[in-house]
Each structure stands twice: as C-alpha cells, then as structure tokens.
Length: 82
Image 1 (cartoon, one colour):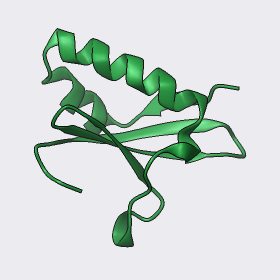
Image 2: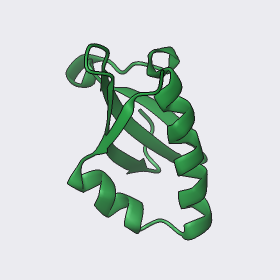
Image 3: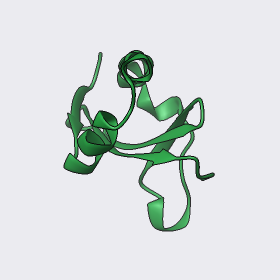
C-alpha cells in the first residue's frame, strides 16, 4: 500500500529552485519511497525520526507515520553530507 505524500513549505520552495529534469527524477524516487519508506536510511541524533534518500548530489529528508500511512517530505539539502 502506498503512503499519502505531504510536503512542507520549505520542501516546496527548495523543489521550485531545481531544474525540470531533476524534478522528474525526484518525483519518480518519491513514488518509490512511498511504497515502502521503512527501507531507506534513517538519520541520527537531532533528526532521529527522519530518513533520507540521495539523488545525485541532493538529499531529500523525509519522515513517515506508519499508523496513518503518511509520508512527510521535509526538505531538500543541496551539496551537504548527512
């Protein structure tokens, strides 16, 4: 079952800054993540409830709620290692 996808305002602003070709790559990857978000790498310390995926040099930080089946897209990190 796929998760419902919700994004934050920060994610939407970051997403608009990216070129169209990269936006399509991100959309495809997010659809894959929505199928099973538990299998992706979890973060540590302050971001312990979040996970991340890598697309090129970008990182997409997201969290999810298993009970409600919702995937929250939090932000896009440009060129920084997490």
